[in-house]
Length: 450
Ligand code: SF4
Ligand code: SF4
Image (cartoon, rainbow, N blue to C red; front, top):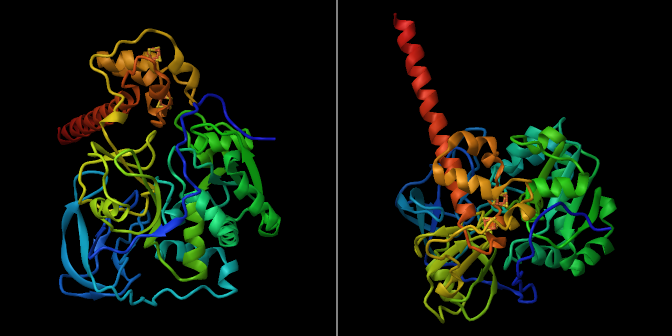
């Protein structure tokens, strides 16, 4: 039986897991941004001129929702200053001149046999090694798992990798199956649950067979084959597909007793606990029509996009757009100088051939956007209210439940910029709520002075 959810679309997957993982030579300089996670940004722990070892912690913040960052090469710190960030803006970064020695830092020893069974030791190690949601969400994993203890009875591991182009999870399953199962087991132990459910789309049947051959039940894991459909890897879709439980509008997975952790995150937990290795590299799928073919590139965190493209054969056509992640939910980067971070699963260089924008699009009221929305929303009406600036109806139509999966835009024959509109609408509602809160507080303060 394959598990799935209602709605969704079938984009051309454009995947190339048959392309073996290549190791990208680390660049002469790496740029380590202090913000590579949701939550409080790190503060630099090093200064210009300092020597750092590979894996050394170079930034941290004691706030509960944060994750330290580490040097991905050994060498000398040549700058601590704002640099272009992959998600936009300038962000404080530690720039390291690579000495090409990869001298390791040994601050994190592998956990002992006893510690590998101790939830607190595993959680502490997740935090120290800077493990975050490496499917792209970048939420600090230790905080997420700890927050679910006692509330979560269903731990789901996300192996759908439903975004077109991306192959990193699939290749991790094929190349490191036993390590991956051990990493999932660690997350399961830390979560305090008996069993983890590993949802994998059946277009990765080779990985499903390989993992099943290693007796996942020994690790407290059940492999759950899933239908091939986008966005199968969405958190709420995974929960629905595997448990049948529905996260209510505005609700969180823990509210229905579920937590979802990505494949690559579990592998990072394995490396942190068994090898004492912090998050300093990952498989990045580098693809798109501006290149001569796809690459599955093991890349150090902090590698600039321009350098990464050069290492993958350079451009054969002029790139118009850099997309980080997959084309459905990915974010456009604005600078070739910005670096890969922990959450960078893909860097896609597209030419203008892939540009789906049309001038002055008009809705033809076909309803195709409604049929595919996995959140049961009505994009056509949400767009209408967005165009009118009608906040009340935007809220009434639950625009805040849109997780910007892009299915409606993908399925729209008129090429209406639906997802972009909903992203903007949510920001508008947030700004409105913040303004109203500030006004109410100012009014209350004035009343109190009377
Ligand atoms: S409205 Fe939002 S959640 Fe629904 S299909 Fe469109 S982008 Fe996805
Ligand atoms: S799919 Fe596009 S054209 Fe059709 S109703 Fe939705 S917004 Fe309008």
